[in-house]
Length: 442
View 1: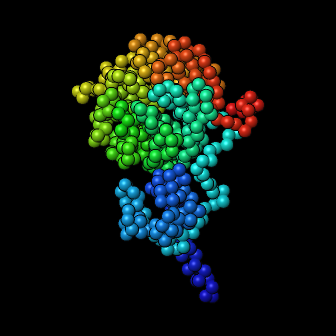
View 2 (view 1 turned 90 degrees about the vertical axis):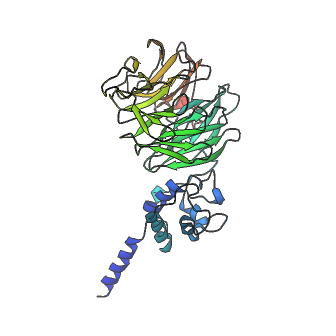
View 3 (view 1 turned 120 degrees about the horizontal axis):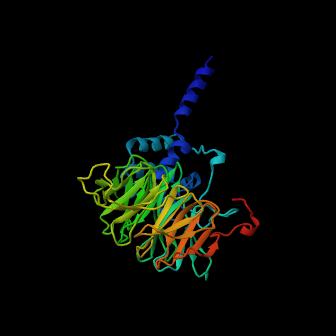
């Protein structure tokens, strides 16, 4: 009869042991993998999987040291440059280590992130982000767990920048072209901002935040700060040189999907699923005003290159051009800061771009075409067709002559921005089979 009580005790103790897969791994993902991943490997330690944790780094096996670093008993305290983990998370890691630090990752959930081993593609990837380099010689394109840098003259194969995030949803070059910032993450696991050094093609740093993908990263005009929209309804401002979070803005009531700095870099406009475009002080995080009258959910925002005027768009299929500043004495329903609205699109708006000379606005989304409008009159001046499905990213070249588009069909298209005539189209990745053999798979 003693067998049943003993089994019950054993079961209870086993059930009380923290789970690496369900409890410990998420903590490491959000707090540690920004530095301890294959592309960076601070202290030669990789925390993207259990095997790397068990192998340890230059100071030996990590299991014997990790709690001491988290508590500050060993220096420097981890995570480096960030607030210490909450006591309950440290206790969770301590309990897991004390119980033997076992790996309970299900076989079907195991994956390994390998530096220098980019994705092998059987189909063109859905393209969610594009950006031209400031000199116009290079186009950055999102891939699966990587960024591809294409020379527009075709003089070299694309440079591949493999990273940790499954999805890259936004890209931005620094003013001098030496830095590429990417925003993305792995859905329901972590959000990430990647900082790539373009002369060397190496990852300078990775900043992890929230438990889901980050959206709409933008660089301040002087390239010193990065804004990112998050699924916890916040906008985060990060120092581009150090990766330190400078402030967190919490005025939104739903996911934030797009951000842009004002001309002087002192304020940020953010848009999201709560239907609002919000103006916020970039230095303090203080909310200032709603830019727009509420309509549908918003997914995209772009700013005039030299004026504090923004164009926003989303669910209701109309792009609205607004003054960034809304007088505080205006009533909520007053929409007199609306400069103009463009014609209704044939699908939800997902991407917007303003030409470098400020004269044109490109509008893209669920419909398989990109329309270009005169920013001063609202008249449509070009239609870029030929896509087989929705478009999720558009970008003007620095000279304004070319418009790049990318979306669901996995093809980059380069159009004459003035006429809408297609100049070039290509699949940005190497496929296992030629694209011509894939037929209508997508």
